[in-house]
Length: 327
Image (cartoon, rainbow, N blue to C red; front, side, top):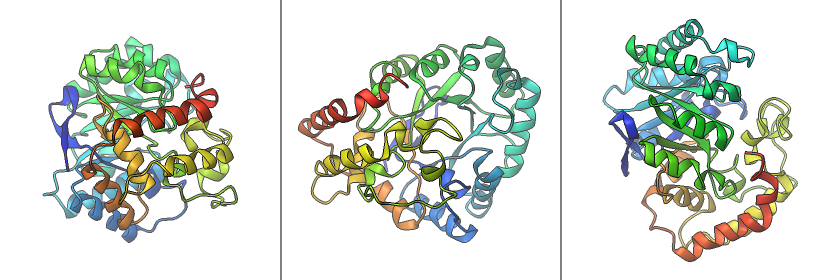
């Protein structure tokens, strides 16, 4: 597995990581032993980067990773967590006192003294431009509660505001063949500033796997059912903001671009890995087989220019009008 320098952190992480939202909640049930088996399979496949958050299963995801770290202290895992969604989304709640409380809880859940990376979890837009907020984050570093901090964002404008702060180590943003806008401004700005880019929602909530039809039904406790139109949180988190039926049709076209021996999901991950400036992509996995297949995407041959051009054409024809102006 290729390991890439994580910008200002001075550390390397696997170019394909593991997102662990699905191990906490909102994707249906995953029992504890199955979750630990997924983590083990990812590590055995070369993954050294886990991404989680304090609200995934109300801390369950962090706790499962903490247990795994205790059982596998030799695995060399870099863990990024997120904070800020445990209270009403008001800018005034992003304070030093709350940051201390939130990071104390995450440190306890993960069983570590210092968090490798803490990220603001898609806060109100004004937070990304607040000097007081970033001063408070600098204080967390000075107090050795966290080694570094970054942001997870919904929009490109939020990402650019965060990159402007000299202490920002990373930006986590939705980037996949159905969401190309970050390539225009955010990724180049991050490269210039030495800020890491974590590509999230890389398979557009599974659309890019090519496994769904317009008749697919998801569980009631799956966000692909209850947040399809942004009912609970930003619509961009579900199917990258693409309408489900249109996304299914576009996914059929995308699947035709997969090279011999690669699945559509692996092709999407390979496409992300090839974008200059991307540090790591964090697909989720509900089974060891998925974790291994995702990791294997890092070893695929680079996609040819004809495929890259075809992805851009597909986006322009089918999806740009839906998502480009919103995020």
